[in-house]
Length: 345
Image (cartoon, rainbow, N blue to C red; front, top):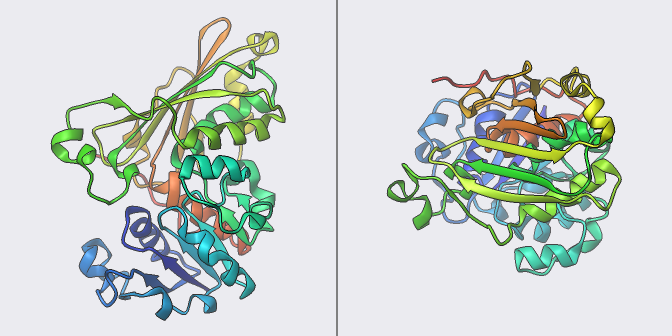
């Protein structure tokens, strides 16, 4: 059994980790931390976990995290990097769901997240945790930077095209929309029901912190520093889900290629990526509360490709992906604890 600790168990990614790990056949939950809620039974805050999680929140000092095999950080940016070095020295594997270990460029991190990086030396070691594209490195890792929710959908949508060299490297457009849970559990005006319901809007139009993460990883996938995507996020009037519409200009090879066959071959055998039949349009509700990504590829013009991607932002976009990484790091079957059927209606 793998002894697991969760730092920051009160937010949406934290409770999603609890939901998944409480059903994992090879996991023993040892500690869930919260300074503010220390002493409160987890099931009192999240009644859905009653009968599944019998722990109470504890302070980080009382959690005994160094005795865990794996520690997840479901915390605001900046928390994991302050504690990672000590845990790694104790032989603990660390998976950070925030952005502390996603960006390799310290200057870019400090620009977008507004704080100095306290352990830049660990950035070189940290592995980007997108299993479908980085599986072997994840297996050997002890420190994971879990991808952002939007970047997961964008990378999985563009990867088959970039790997096969079928699209122009510049002029990529990623129009992406997320449910309000992507903003976290904190109280903010823009996520109030009266503000977000019956409404649709773009935000971060002048620049969003997931933009540099997306472009860093697309360049890695393509092996081409010229690759650049324009990323525009939008807010959907729903709780869970991401829908990304991706555009690119096909080069001569791409115009001649069978795009449907390209995607099907690229994701053949991938349990959590479903390439839909030609002509399909995936819906966010088809992946709700699951670790599944559904993708459809279209060719609306002879020189243009459009890829539609849906995922649950809290599962494959965050906590489910982190569990997928844990399975790989610990030598387990990758799907363990992640076989939930999507919830519909």
